[in-house]
Amino acid sequence: MRILILHNRYQQAGGEDVVFEAETQMLREKGHEVIPVEVNNDNINNPIRKIGAALSAVHSIKGCQLLEEYLRKAKPEILHVHNYFPMFSPSVFKVAHRYGVPTVHTLHNYRAICPSALFLRNGVIDETSLQYSAFHMIPKRVYQESYLGTAAVAFMIEFHKAIHTWERHVDAFIALSRFACQKFIQAGFPSDKIHIKPNFVDEPPKLEKVYQQRVGALFVGRLSREKGVDTLLKAWQGIDYPLTLIGGVNMDLPRYVKGNIRLIGRLTREEVFLAMSKARFLVMPSECYEGFPVTLCEAFAMKLPVIASNIGSLTELVEEGVTGYKFEPGNVEGLRHTALKLIDSPTEADKMGANARRKYEMSYTKERNYPQLMSIYEQAIEQYKR
Image 1 (cartoon, rainbow, N blue to C red):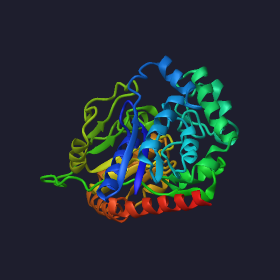
Image 2 (image 1 turned 120 degrees about the vertical axis):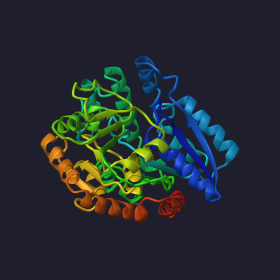
Image 3 (image 1 turned 90 degrees about the vertical axis):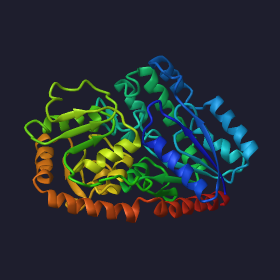
Image 4 (image 1 turned 180 degrees about the vertical axis):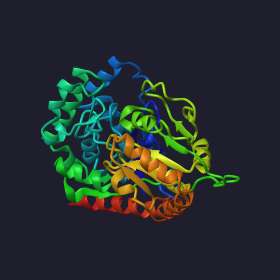
């Protein structure tokens, strides 16, 4: 199959970029002809340019022209869109249909519903745009802390809702969890076109002395308040056990990052796997709606149990007492108590780690993911023919 995959990369590579690369590689390994259509945000390096990009996100003339060039030359059998914001726009789906090409869209976040993309306002969950309209978020400046930027993204959302872009020009949606699926159905997306398919990760590299003398808790991700880093650091006060934080810093870290708390910045994927092989458990204290964290897949692949906040998709991805534990988001004492349970029970942690590995093998491998993706492509093609 000849597949066109469209993606607007982020300045700081994140989970969506990893998924785009992994699916592209998987499809090529299976013998498909994959043509990526990529742009990046590298030149959008200040708030003014970011707002300017948002203003063009309703209908990006340059983005649609670029896609048209690929459609004419490649003549693909299907278009798979990961991230269209801000250099492309939702108009790409209509362009593809005009060229007779069926479309698939992976719903990595909630950008099609909420200007913040995460239902967040000042680090707190806010579903106003889901319950009412994205225009209600303009006074709250949830995009780049800007009235104009938020207004531009809100107009993109409401414009494409009004002209029925999602119902008319997307043949299949990929939701990453049951939670996300329900949010999009609640927002009016056609339920019969939404397919649930998780992310996957390749088998981790074989590491010497892997899983020997595992000790310490690990956090991997962006160090920001919505990721629950504040809660995590507060919970760790008084815990005499190593905590390592891996990731870029997007907040002023509190004064208590000291002692047995270690911050080591961004690492390569191989270095993250090495850190996971030495850790006892992973902590995901998010206070926002995660999509489907690749980090969780990686942890499960490395026999690492996960302590996660009981919010969004994490509620269904971590099985209580089987692959990890859950606590209420933002609850410092709840997180401290949960962490101490695993710290004091290494045998239980090992058992959960083995369960996590089995879950990875059953659900989050390339071999499991490929037939799911191809089935969605086939259904999208059939849907387009109707």
